[in-house]
Image (tube, rainbow, N blue to C red; front, top):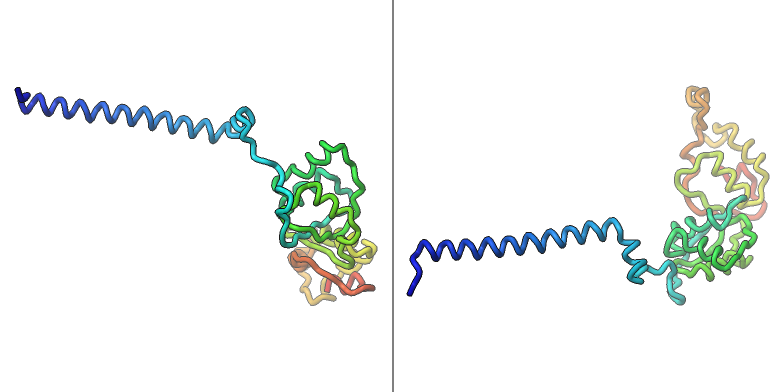
Length: 212
């Protein structure tokens, strides 16, 4: 016997309601799961053994990268520099490697030619190899002040810091206009003049020639 039209409509409506409830439940579970994953991904990976490797695999090294080490740098300060240069996979990989291996190597200031996507062990070996230290080369990164820049230039080029301080004392020598208001406020007219890049100079170069 065929149900009356009104009853068929009620059944159809009931079926749609049931389907909507199921979809809402699944959607809520999915949204909840996504929230949990977004906030606790590291812990979940750790518990399930899904942790992302901190190191690149051996044999992946490619291309070229430059690392600047300044006086006072340690494994902790060099580690994020390697990551920013594309050498290591994570900011802490190099430092964690040194700690795990109980290593405290002597780091020499200078600019070093490395490769991208290296293991921490390979990066350390390259840093300690004098052949990878670039002579008469300095690397200035973005965001450095004049004082920070000349400190790096001094250490990288083995030119006394006092020579650079004397060289930047009179910006007009380099054709940079001196704004008295900036100077009175403690500013340095050469800010922004020293463009971030990797520079290589001839042997015997002077501080003034470097700034020029």
